[in-house]
Image 1 (cartoon, helix red, strand yellow):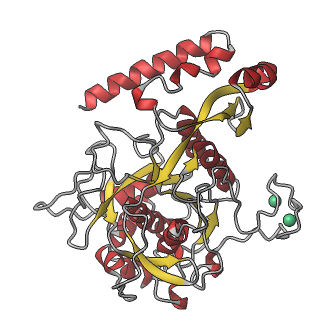
Image 2 (cartoon, rainbow, N blue to C red):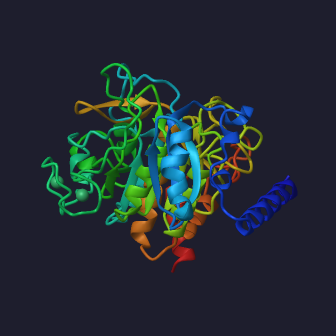
Image 3 (cartoon, rainbow, N blue to C red):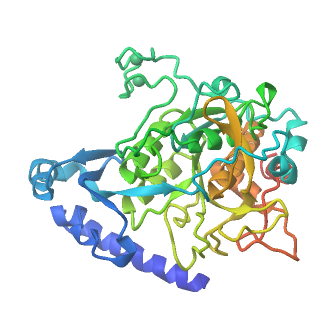
Length: 414
Ligand SMILES: [Ca+2]
Ligand SMILES: [Ca+2]
């Protein structure tokens, strides 16, 4: 199987180098044929929005009423400086149910943190100090008593005055920045982002939830409002934003992007900046090696893709898997974390498993700030717990153990 993957890679590289030698045209940077013409690319497209990557690597999202107008008014005049254009599309959260479980919640249920031996790391005064984490998700309730002190506030920005005080291109980005152009229906605010943020960095001294890295700082960059999903273009803008805010790690608990070269290019930009991206494998119960889904299946050097395990330390049936493309498992069923309106509740999904790995990476990096993203990833993957009787269907066959991961990183980075 490995040989097969390598030969596919060789063909792609050849095509790219040929394309680089040809003169650039509107058709070569914007292949409209990918729009709805391939079954694998049949994601819901947002037809009036175009993701543009410029030759210097940065991204914008452009709008136009028709594709002809876009090409004539935007693409042709800017062609020299544009590297790639794609239609924008919709992606969804990787959660198993839309419902937060509030009944039968045990507010002292730390099965996930216990299984991966987090308290052993906390016992060494390793809490994620000085590490910033980007949460690309839905709204994060920064007023939650367990979260407000662990938000990375941009103190050069005065909130709420409608002015970009620090001139970084984002107006009022005091507690992160919002990138939502595909609004949800109804009025309910999704708890997803608040729950994910709490698993990573809830302040365990201020309530029930034990965040993995309780002194790390979150940079919220919401791009999904709720049940309608969010736009890939907004996700890319959010990834780009947090990368300018000094984050070492980004949590991406969403997926379902079909054939998105732009999103992969955005991951390449993050890789160039040494940022680690932790991605939820998805909850369709499929094998990503055979039915790839993005960003989970990008397989970038700076990427970790996470499956979900149960309290009995087995792969949960709805978790996506893959011996090649999914790296490890982490707790993902009935996970206690922060939700809106100052509450706590359970949620389940690979969306909940990924932030355990994100928080573990923050712990490791705070202990070895000089480590590279690849070293942190290597330590996390080399140190998983493997039970021969019930191996996970993932590359490492095992489940996160943050105590062993820290030992491994200290060997790698003495
Ligand atoms: Ca600003
Ligand atoms: Ca301001």
